[in-house]
Length: 340
Ligand code: PEP
Ligand code: MN
Image (tube, rainbow, N blue to C red; front, side, top):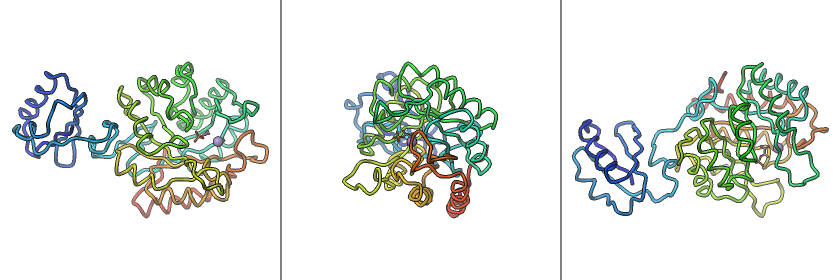
């Protein structure tokens, strides 16, 4: 249930509603809109009726929220949420560009790629250390060693780093070494992992599941928000459809849909759905044009020899060209690329 107060509601009128809610076992989530203060009520609201609250002094309106993802819904929090990562703020008029190799293969390649892409304007470095590979015989990642290299390069270049977590037991490692914890598509509905990450204070990047609807994705985000992790970014990475000409179908329509339904920032990963570097570039441009708050792209300095996802990894020079293009597209929308 949502309670919308009148623009001139007094502190005493707010307090009266607060007292009623807390004394009846409900939590409330205040959110200051452009004109009105809004309270989202959390708890089993079946016993409450909107009509009951409409007659409280200072209340302008009250209505039920249909969605089960309350804290992540725009009704609860009408303004865009801004997630701070190091010096950059994601979700407003700054574009986040997370770039780097699919997997951290060794220290030198990570250092070389990172130095070059940061020079071209990447504002976050990505790199997988624990890899969710379809085959058990494929490269599984360097594990902790990879996270150490990532932390080192992030500190040296003054750039936040993002990497994917797979297991609950690795949470302390990720707390120590990364700035943003990525939850991969395959773990979007790993509710045990989500419940544990809900207590973590670090920003989280929640990828869309391979066959998840937007509402299922937002419900997964709600697991994180329900226990207090408010620093959530969503990441569209394509879904499985009947279309076989690309690896997955990049559902860019989810960008405006998420903006309508939720206040959370949304990042687009065009690399994993497109699967081929020449196809990644136009969809990266399209993501920014569609209103995404950032992109995540795979870049490799020797993609022919990459241990994972070489075919979709951009050459650093291509990444440089892409940065120039998205800067122009972002500019048309009154946005700029975030700088550390
Ligand atoms: C990745 O970002 O390297 C990755 C494995 O992505 P996804 O979970 O979207 O497949
Ligand atoms: Mn990859």
